Length: 150
Image (tube, rainbow, N blue to C red):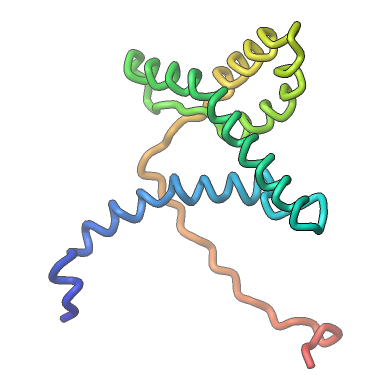
């Protein structure tokens, strides 16, 4: 028997496995939704600028969506629903990109913030705990003869 199985029982890894999902979702948001690896130029300065702009955008989106997130959490505690709710981060990012210019124009800042708040609150998602979907393992087909490696 392995030493690690006596020190750490298998049951603790199931709970630990689910803690990593927030980190995985953060990476997915950075890499897929924002396109962190898609740069507008090839120089080191352009890459650094793009990276910093995208991190700034994520930070601003998190700051703008935080009040709505707190409001939704408070509603989850007060109302008795089948499922709790949370904001859709991908949707929040898309909304922040759309309203971004309005946040920098003095006369429409309040309208932009209200729009973000209203849309984020209306587009919350349900949190369904304990969902399990078996993976469908696809059989890899060999490449066609035209594309055969040398």
